[in-house]
Length: 359
Image (cartoon, rainbow, N blue to C red; front, side):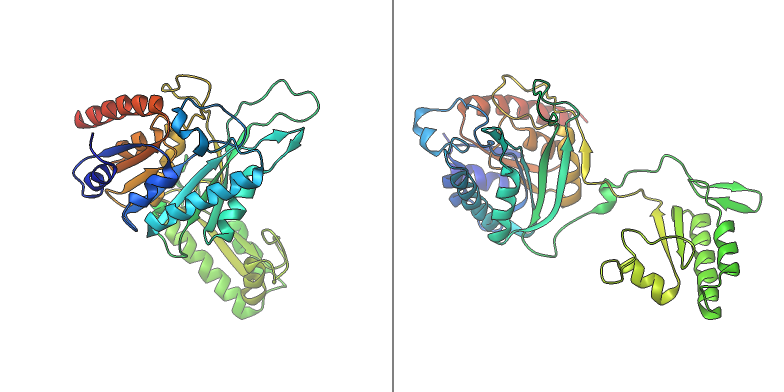
């Protein structure tokens, strides 16, 4: 059997599309070259949630069976400390975790882990709420739970991120009505122009600057650079989030300039931090492991993977992360402690490579 280092080097050296490593990730991560991975996407076993089919030699290192939740958190912090070593300076970590009720007490396990990683040096950029749109129906003394967390971490303040690849295309485009252009939501600028001209809150210099900015925005609309916009004028509309200049940059802009304009880019708008995706997967073969649907992986891979990236999943399961990486033109490395899941992943990834070669 090819050794661990040889498998890793084959993928890192771009000699094969993927590599599967059987064993304990905390040990195997030591074999990875420093700063060799572009992106890590993973979902570790949740605390006290599932039984996993593994060989006896690995029962002592299985994550999730720890009696003390602090031990669970500490072990994950140690593992992701090693992950940070192998991740490139521009790389990202996407971490999916579910929570757990213990003695009727919601444990807050995802945030315990996230705070532990922050304390260890990771920078948390997003907490995505994965709305699974279905959940526990049997509870009678609390609301049913339908979501999990996906944390987006980076090593450094500057990192690879391609927003244009994940923009959501607008459903409507601007239209022409006579001599006026109407935005995707029906804004023509006529009302804003009247408010500027009739304002008793703007001085003459601010009034002229506001009219000029409005005309420039309408010109961008005509050129197709934007599809929609909103203008806030002092004394006419409220600021977003807060009127406090100490809290809101928009409030400060409104005070200093008398107006501000927010536009929607023609390339599309930014996805939000709430993802509504049903956790169904044709490769789910039993009830013991968490399902990681391919759809969930599109934004992380498209946004944070440069061309021909290497994507690592240290808790691979049946290979969803690697299959998605291959689908989007990247390479993948997966670590898994269960022989059964390694076999499933191998079959799945071979099919992914064959399907990709047909196009």
